[in-house]
Image (cartoon, rainbow, N blue to C red):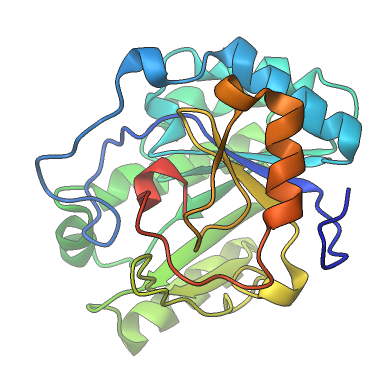
Length: 266
């Protein structure tokens, strides 16, 4: 499956919810979050249908995101549904890890292969400040639970936010190196201003190599994070939504004024 710039599209990011158990300042407002109505959110069967069609067209890599995907009820059932689709070679999840102590083993049994964990600092006070009340020890317990359960690799994503400094970088590098966790640094992004850059240690942010589409919780198939383009799989049908997303995928990102990070997974 190729877009109009001959980029091979084989990666689908699926945001399953706009809810989260943290309130990271660069992702969600502290209060007043206007959540989607439950009737507007895709069912697991609908998500599986979108993924299945995509896999038939060449998608082989699927990542579940949020919000925080582990706050979604019966998320392991969706994991099992997607893992059973022939052709899904890489099934992963982005998480803040707070609920991994409870879910890691069941996720592995359901078919999840690996996780990306958002971890911006190893300073407990700074972690609480960034996440507006999050518990760093709980996140570290979640990472350890994932390691013991066999989720591999565990990739760490650190946002270089306004409080980020060289002490944070050094501590994260030492922690990642001691366990062999791949570590990526992501400069803080702004959807409306179109501010983004290539991920340090990863491939994200490089528009020339972009291989992904995104599915929002309410069924909008988006060809680009930094674009207002979106195609409703319910209104248009799955096949037509994919066709339009491929045909209109921009050469590079610009800005997005119609959606939020917590509805797309960043």
